[in-house]
Amino acid sequence: MDHHDINQTRRDLLITGALSATATALPAVGHAQALAEAGTAASTPAPATGKVALRVNGRQVELDVDTRTTLLDLLREHLHLTGTKKGCDQGQCGACTVIVDGRRINSCLSLAVMHEGAEVTTIEGLGQPGKLHPMQAAFIKHDGYQCGYCTPGQICSAVAVLDEVRRGIPSHASADLNAKPLLSAAEIRERMSGNICRCGAYSNIVDAITEVGGGKA
Image 1 (cartoon, rainbow, N blue to C red):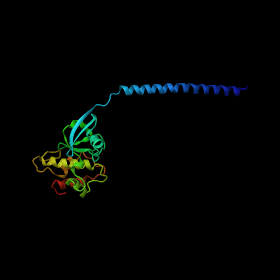
Image 2 (cartoon, rainbow, N blue to C red):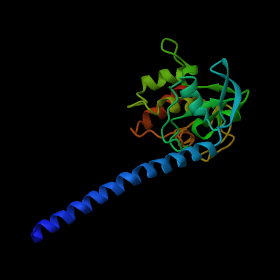
Image 3 (cartoon, helix red, strand yellow):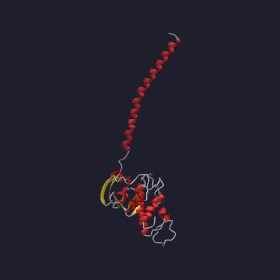
Image 4 (spheres, rainbow, N blue to C red):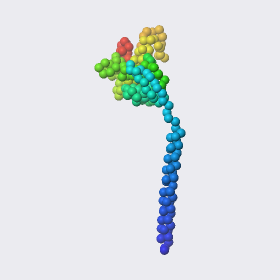
């Protein structure tokens, strides 16, 4: 046997040995991984659930949900009211704005179980095709949207803004707290500043809100 044949035989033996070792180790690794996964599953507690009853757009609903469920996810995933949009999911864009007990809130930041017995109004509850809310009609008239993704939150927020104005609640832009009504472009922009329109339809949004509020757009 020449030197080349000896090296070839040695190489074949090394390869065969490595393959055998790998074949032996793989079942052990797989078994260990399965045990680890089973242990993790056994040690992970089931999510806590709780019942929440509230009125949504005039309809009484009662659901058993994970206590970590946000009001936004309850509306979208459980009640299929998908008009309320999930944008940033961090309370920064306002796309998820709904009206709860007369006040606008970012539904992505609020847990559903916090609103037991609350009255919730979403964009679907404000108006429907054929019977639009005045604010919805004004947004259409003044082209207060482009892509439309932020529009439900904008409209819910705008309705709440006019209610704040009617009640004389001031904003940081209110120069004269005795002025009635507190309705100006600066007021509207300040009060609507939590609702972001990435398309930039702000001037048209201000015109729509001004018209519904009784001002001159």
